[in-house]
Image (cartoon, rainbow, N blue to C red; front, top):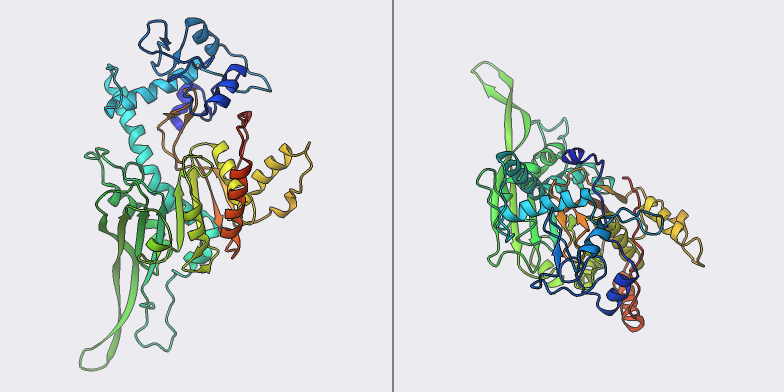
Length: 453
């Protein structure tokens, strides 16, 4: 994210909304409150918005307060160990303005903005980078992560035995199938994004898969199957071709006197097939589509109360009635969300271990509690976690806490699902108990943790 250098930042600030006593009490009474949108970002007082007493930040025009005093307090820097969030600082304000510019260019902002040519071009670059982060992340993580290598190793071409007179490579054709679960038309498939100045999403996915097909040169077809209730109403079925690895063959010819050998070089074509299905990911759809070699979730939000991922996750763990340690990759918008998701997957039996860095964070949080958590158990080389180098440049504003910023696909983790026969049963028991024991909880204190691959 080189553009952050212009703000003298090495990384994007996350979780910047200050959570004071007034806000904590308001959130307990109404967890759906939207700070800085329909409630004051400083004191959580309900806003009228039509009343002139409500004030908006003049710099970004994205954050609202009930008074000038509350606006002033939110802009003050009072960083301490208990509350690391900086509120609506000048940096947050500048980044929110970027979000305002991009929304304006997409027709999602009411206020008209006058932009220079440079500002407009930079904004379009950031928007494009977010869309391109989906295929780029998918392709590069498949190439780099250890957990995918055993599956991909089966996609290598095998040389024929010396006794094979035809010589060359084995002609065995192999298909590599990826399921992108919970996909949407707007995000993974680019929706109504105007890509007149660049390639379509289908071409972008195909191009991103070029290096993968060259590295694992036994692949003849790559299937990208997008499944989710927000996929296009009309199912997608697009095919693109990419140039495969160059192959050298030996053949014989009869020139009337003796047989001679000659070398010929050909470049194979790899088929990239993009399909979508507008439905939930469950056993019924998996019975009609090719079995996945790898499953992918882009920004699922496993711990978000608005979504129920148990059916999709249970299908991943036990496909066609058979338990499998299926390779998976998941992205999140923030580090805190990634850590929460990993805890959720581990608690419900979908993964056997946590990444060591996450286990270390959890162990540190439990030092003052009696717990059976054993950090020594979490030493699995197959699981990975860290910041995604293929994330885009577009900074987005949270929809419920106006000072919170994020970048889509910024954090990434993956590994192998547990393949435990009892995982889905255990998950259902845990979820039932959580529903019985659920009571309004005080919001967790926000913290900033560092994590590496």
